[in-house]
Image (cartoon, rainbow over all chains, first blue to last red; front, side, top):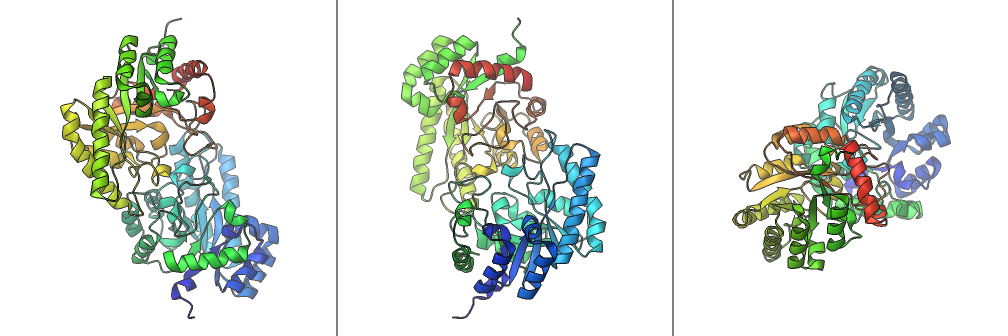
Length: 273
Length: 273
């Protein structure tokens, strides 16, 4: 059987196979003929940066992105500077690992003042941009679902992400469209269109009913309510034809053999993405 | 000790004391010197409409709203007409119970097509308005948090609610501002200002970290991250000085004696609302 062309765009976001270390994930991709992977820093750290880079290079895998920089807001200037240091390390790691995109999960506010936290995000990104540019790394602002506004990201909509990104050049800052986070947004298609030329990544999973867990409760594509295919076409109309990361954070999936999960992902991807 | 004036605006939203039937809730309000209550239809049905009305009248309680109408989207025209029938009954009940406000929880879509579901909401409201007006009942569109977009309401933002409400006169349709649902919204204060003259209700609780349950996980005012007092002042600047409903959907609170919960609510209300 001929391999469906869309599968060439599939990138395994490593958190989907949290049960695997990097070595296992690389081998899993090879065996499933998945040519791209998105890395998470805690997995890279576990394996070691050089060893990770070597494994990925030897396997001929393309790294679609590194997750994550961000977490900019903090109570004191000193803490914010520490966060920025960590972001600089993330940029260096991204470059070493051979990707051009660092995903930003912008962080929650340290207290009840969400507006100030949002300013900290803008300031943090502005400070990080020249450093990232010097490494050829683009910063991809990923709005997270509003249900994570208190503990993960005060950037909740593509509107916000676009407004920040537009303060920079497209080779500096763009946005990440993750269907799980943005599917509900009445402005979704308008904001995707607005992001034309700035979409740096497209992530898929699904929103199932009921959501089994606020963090580890994402569904397999096709099992939920998200119009994934429609959103993909909108993202393509905005000029993005790059890797499509499958990012399913789900305990039940982590409890299964990774090889089996990858086969299911490929089937769902062809059918629903 | 003098009773703080703000307590005169406290209305007990009945779902906060789900452990109580209506009779117990009425007695609880009397004993706690809470002069207002917001009713839920399942509680009224349990007690009976006439009996409920009599109890409330005898206790001299003001009914701030009835929850809920809505649930407009459905796959077939026949089903949507059934939903509308149920909304008409809700209007009649609201009038009988002596409130002028029916809260609308607009409903999820029946399938993946969220845009069509949103059209069903607009159509349903348009059909309901003349009937509601003839009973002197205003329809309050309550945007629910985007995490409920798949199973409770495709109206997720004040922007959406305002856009629908503005198609009608202020005595016909307005919006309900519930801090739990809207606190994260980058457009919050702009949209509250836009709702000037159309705010029909203000609901308080808090967003705690972590949220213990997606539905039954709201916090007591002051225990979470929401800038409740700031939002109250914005709602007042938009002309709303009516009842402030305490609507805390929380299993742990339902497991406690209602009298104790009411005392805690009063203290938190004075301090944080």
